[in-house]
Every structure is written in structure tokens, then in C-alpha cells.
Length: 508
Image 1 (cartoon, rainbow, N blue to C red):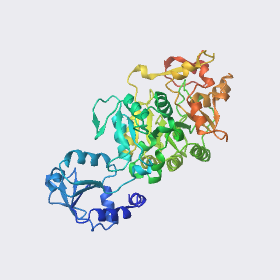
Image 2: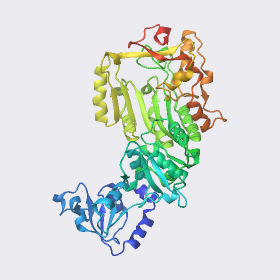
Image 3: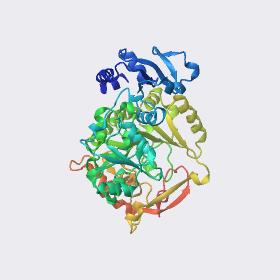
Image 4: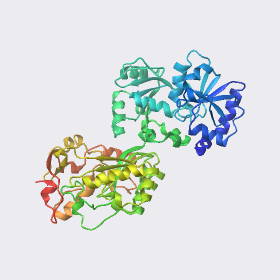
């Protein structure tokens, strides 16, 4: 938190506050980490602070002190009628707006942030005005990361499925009315927060463009920004976030195969892991090189998933997590695992999972309930984020097959109806929109078949490859879609025998 204060030049901001608030009575709202760090590292005695208020302070704390200042119960805040309330909370925008519109509506009390993170002037030059388009949550989150007292650049909001006339003091327009304002040049464009948006942000931008807005006047806010801890969003990063759609540069999702083999050997595994007879692990050096190359291409990646095979088989998993978060600190990082090996992991890995805010998704396979119950207890004890998907009934104890040996005649229909078309996957340097393209070579070798995959993958290290081309190829059918069926066939889950069968993996 001290580094955060330095990043946003608290010394300079404090001097400005002293000049502006000279001889004025001040109550600080927020008795948490931000104000504690300010008190520990700065002399703020030039401000006439008469007390500190927080929602957690009730009437019983009225005679108590915090950081040398009197505690003021939240219920009594308005009664003090201070000249100014300094809000010492990082995510302060909505609190300031609420105080202005409600608690101090009839008062001359000034409501200000104790620390400004960044102003809209650093996003938008001149007198440009915008309408924010999105859900109510998306708009609230956008206000939270733009720091300015009066939001001068925001002309209004367009809230999906919301018929209210105003939102946080801003007039609410329909999408059609927003377009009319744009065409009449009453606004310069729109802000499009990609929060609660499906994972392919580019398709959303494309739809907004088709509706009638020019691409250079659409300002998408990357989803990875909303996933970040606001206190870790630097001034530079926030400034780079607001670019128009022509310069938008966020990869929706990427999956890394850390291990080709698995410890469970499920018949019908969609990654063909049981067909890999020799242990094959992605090295940290290869992984690091892939991450570095992706950083050359994309400023942000919304979601990175680490899977396999079974990712816990890779002893360098911890190093990979740490490096990923160094390069892409705001990405949503997760592990996809069967969970069986967690009791064998050392404490270092659990510490890494916790410190890097990694989410672990575990599937409980049939006959594994007892060990997954133990894993459940273990992960609770280690205080890491996880979710266990347990089968609810016999229908969830089945695997499905969708691969076929004969080409279908409508790959476009297969692609656009495929729920897994966002399974963008890297296996070594092979990169494709679908994990099938980077794993089917295993089936070709084992069964002696010839499913063509080469033209369905990109070489990550092809110097001619651009972010724009990657997104275009990820958003359209690949040749391998011809070998997928939109009609799935289900079979009971079971462990593969010593001689895997073609019909376990393919519709034949």
C-alpha cells in the first residue's frame, strides 16, 4: 500500500489538500488499510481532522480512538456537518456519489477522495463526452476505476434491461437514443466496459460497430482491468486501458497444456491423454518463452488456464504461476485438475496458489469421491480458492464423443454451435482456437489414422503473425471443424484398458 501511495504521488496531493482545505473541519471516512498506511508514513497534522468515520463504527465506539483520531459512528456522520469528508477508500467513486446525492444532499459539505488515482483528463483529451453502455454492474465498476469528482466526460449511461430514468445521477438512455446522440454529435462516442461480457470481447465490439458506431469512437475497457485488485492498478496501466477499439489488444483466453499424460487415464479423454505412453511435460523454459511471446502480441490476456493431461504432474507448476502473474498481473489465472495429487503437494505450492490468487477447478470423477472429500478439507485448510464439480446423478458420470473420421459438410454450423470454440490452446508452439487441433496428432500416431490438423494451427513464433490475425483466425471455423459432430454421443465413464479402442474416442 505504501508503494501505491508513492505511485500516485500522495505528497503532492496532500499539499494540494492542505491549500484547498485550510481552516476547514474534516472527517476522514474509511478506517482501513489506506488511512492506516497514510498515518504510518506521512505527517498529516496540517489538516484539521476532527475524527474518523467508518460503517463498522457503531454508537458504542463513540468514545474510542483510531490512529490518534476520535471514532465517529456512521449514524452520526451527517450530524457533525463537517466542511469536508475525505474518503480514504481506494474504490471510492460510488461512496462519494452516494454521499453527495443522499447523506449530504442538503449540506455544503465537500466530499473528496483522500487519494485520487487518476483523472478522466488522462483518458480523454479536450471536451469529449461519452455514454457508458453495459449492465448496471459494469457501469458501477467503470465508475470505480475512473477517479474524478464530477465525471465530466460521462454524458450518460445506457443500462441493459434497466428502465430507470437515472443511474448514480446520470441520465439513462436507450441504445437507440445513444446512437441518435452520437449521430447528432452530442456525444463523441461510447465507453464499453467488457465486464460480464461473454469471453470473446471482439464479437461484442463487432456487434456495437454494426449497430452504427464507428470503431474509432468505441472505447472498450478490458475485462482484465475489472479482474484486478484496484490497489494494484498503476497510473500507467489505467491510462493504457482506455484505447479505442482500433487499438484494443486483449486476448480473451488461452489454455496451456503442462502435461500430455495424466494419472487417471479416462477412456474417451478429449485430449487423448491415455494414448501418450511416455511422460511428456512442458518445461518452464518453454512455458516462459510462450508467455513472453504472447506479451509481444497482446497487452492483456483475460483468462489463462493451466491444464493437461494433469497439470499437477508438472513439478514446475509453481514457477509457471509466479512468472505468469509477473507478466500478466491482471489475468484471471486458473488450474483445471482432477485434484487427486493435491495431498502429495508441498506447502510451497499452496502458498503460491494463495499469494497469486489462483482459482483451481476440480472435477470429481466416479470412484474418486473419497479422495476428493479429503482434497476438499485440505484446500479449505490451506485457504486457497477452489471449486469442486461433483456429479449430481448418473447422467454426469458419462463422457461424450464428438470427433468423427468422416468429414461433415457444414463446418461453419459445427463451429458456431460449439460451446468449446473458445478453448484457445497452446501445446508447445502449436496454437489453435481448439484443443482438438493441438492434440489429435496423438490419436493419429496411436491408431494409424490421418485426421488433418496442420492447417488448423498457428506457429506461435511465426514472425509474420500479428494480434489482429490471431483474433481473426480464432473467431472463425478451422478446417478441423469438419471432423467434429454437432451431435454428441455419450458413454459411461471408465478407465481405459491396456489397449485403448478407436471407438472410445471417435464416432465410428
